[in-house]
Image (cartoon, rainbow, N blue to C red; front, side, top):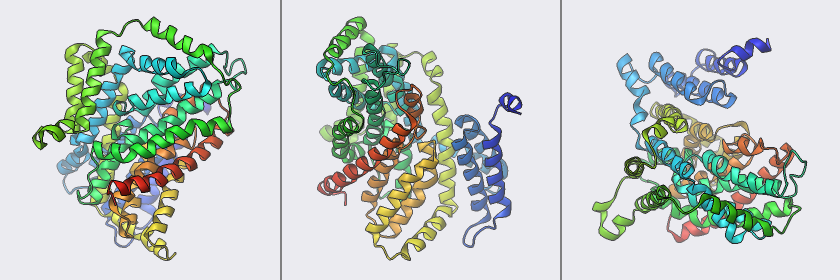
Length: 492
């Protein structure tokens, strides 16, 4: 049986489970009062897709293609086949989807040119005399490249993690030697836990953030539009406080055996020497990086007037165009950037399904149901927001994809909070923060997690223990300082 399963292109158990759940919702459970049949049937497809994604029945892009096909063939969104097909493909015109896809392509330049590694080694060469200094160096490098690396997996797992492992190996701290507690375990944990924090600080730091922007915009009738600048400004103070505290918390709970690392600076300096002088392509990459940040921050419009405002997605296309013209990236590089094209496909499918669940009234019905349940408890909006945020965050123990979690739950939880009287901007920022903090919890919580966990520097118990502790610490620091900072900014 196991040999037969291995030959299948899909995982049998998750596939059967997804189909069974979709079948039960569609055919067995009666359509609730106040919900249309089409909305209920789309929910069946949506839930089945989410279950398949969580169970990794197929690659997420393949599941997205299947979901698009089923939406078009079943006609749950429209009366005619032509309109159903147009609905199924409707989200591929979304600028937010292309913003993430293009930004992933651009982030390839950080790896190809070696600029990402140079930045990390540079920080280590400055403050690498102690283990905790190396930790802050890795965190600073992660923060610096976060705005243009929407694949948090590429950032934490593809750029920072190899450097972290090289440093640990230079101190003979490896799982193979049984010496991971010397320095490797601590640096691996810092390497990972910097990732959720920096992901929460910029719209363009991880794929689900633009989805949050889109869902907030639609839920408030465009009353709340989280621009790149608004998000970055709102999350700067809470994020920086979390970044400053995180390495210290991990240091206290799982301290490294080696505290002093005088050779680390030498090691970083040697690697910088191997990289040689800053290349022409690195300079261009750095210039494009700076240009994109200035445009995303809307600096030209602030100086010269609104007529110089440039759309965030147009900025991403401009950055990629410059890199292609300058030869930093080739079209072959772009075509080979599978994660970018994959993201565009599955992101488009999930956004489409979530959008039509809202249009068909299911999100409104579900929100009303939750609202009624919370109303029975007698809590005001503040108590309700606390409950909703905690449930929303810790439900991530059941998810292996942050995007799947946000797609499945954000709209409903946000709508409930608004109905109960939560200030729209405040609650949007709280849920947006929670949506990134939840990445800390498990070794499957986000793409970066298995990359670092599988390197063997921590045990499962250690990972889950520090994951829960950091979720509490980040939540308290982020929301606590955020309430003060957001009040100062006039966001509520």
